[in-house]
Length: 76
Figure 1 (cartoon, rainbow, N blue to C red):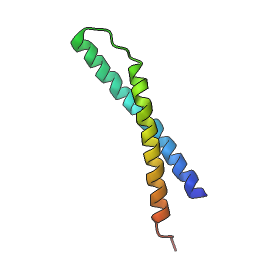
Figure 2 (cartoon, rainbow, N blue to C red):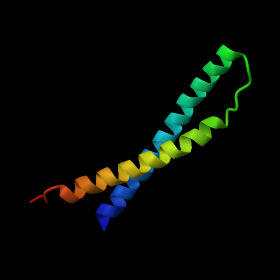
Figure 3 (cartoon, rainbow, N blue to C red):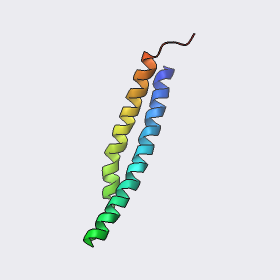
Figure 4 (cartoon, rainbow, N blue to C red):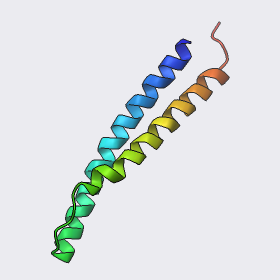
């Protein structure tokens, strides 16, 4: 059961970190698009696009960590 909780913690941390990194990157992209087009851009688009990225990163981090811990040979 501890392997599950460790994997859940890693998945949660991965999701949070990737969410905020993608928000920051998308803000820079949207600011660049605004500078090029001189039109106002909806900045909430960054959060709406970053939510699936964070969720996918959390699921990937959880499943990769769980598979690696289950397949690891027990320490002697």
